[in-house]
Length: 520
Image (cartoon, rainbow, N blue to C red; front, side, top):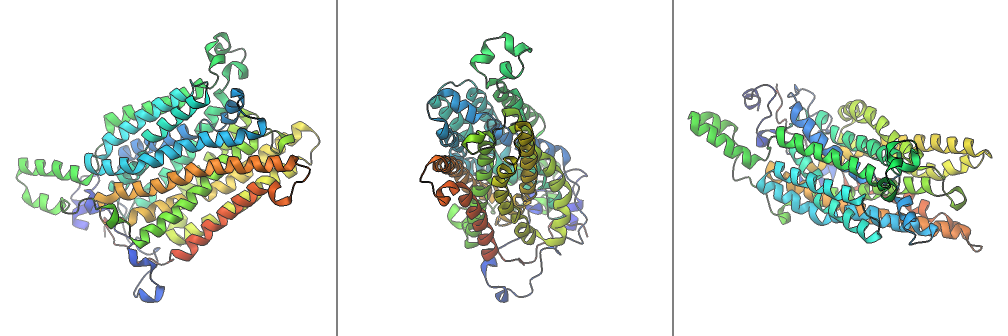
């Protein structure tokens, strides 16, 4: 592989088939004693000289990755207030209806993401990415103009259905990296997600209801911003998508192997350099496989683990703003929209250090499976910590002091949970490495994102419903300890199931990684 690698010009990626490592195989589910001569996954790339990353392509892909969490989370600080403003449900039922709106994005995404992934395997990554970003922009801007619950449902569903980009972005990232540099490239994707979790809630918290929040600004002079108080944050989120569309159109290169084959063939015919064509061109026979062939027992195990992880993470993303917004007398923290945005945005600061500095170091020392297991331990701690924040805040009789304690407590708990997000990178690497060939990456990632989207679709609704039940039970004269804390029992149970499932079914020592793309 060294020769193939050196044949590429500096700053350019190798052809996808020469880069994509086939790390893990279905028989990993065999007992350790049945797999002789295996080595830990920490020793496979230690002697590789990393291939230079194609920075321009990675920048565009990261920008495209950034747009989804911004569009997904921009509504979180104000969605409960938005539902309350509609005056369609009692105050204690706001969480249930907000959970429906939050779930619709992922539910619609679940229904289309596999289609987008399979389509990208046929027509290319770039057109699918640009189409999805354009649709997402339209959907989120339209969301800010809705004044009925049905309108919110339609706009949110459209945005989710058009956005199958994460599976395609992961496929493109895998196709422009190799075994020697993927541990540097893939942490950038959850880092972008974390930045989106920082930017989206900040936009939603600080720009929602601008006429009320900033009475001396230009927003207070125009009735439009009072009539549509949530348009500004949705517009800003939509503009992020349009920026990614423009840069993607101008600078993103196609990475699909079959498209590269055609380009290399045309170049070879012009130059008559048949030897170079033979050396670098992927095997055309290695096309995308059927879903039946892709669904090996090992991949199914990964997908189940990935689904539980998504169920837990989406539950976290739903409960934090809901718990923060709910009035103190109703069982929450009673934070304002801008305070909620600030606490949610703290996630990005921690994630910057964790994903860019801590993950590469721990990945080299522990390997992907051990790191995944250790990182998962942060979730039960974080879920147990949420109700404790309220308990501590109630110790302060002064409202201002209690609010400050709540904000500090939430930032600490969110930071603990953010450390555990290294599991997202680990699972992404494992799923990518289960692909039988590069041409199946879109389908593999489409399957993974379908499972994730389904979990994200049901989790916010469940969280909202269970939280409403807990609030109602707390006010009942016949309340029980179980009903009063039902939401917290559920969250802790899900986080522990996620840890147990992965620890039992995924072995620590996978087969030795092929050193694809390493410069010896």
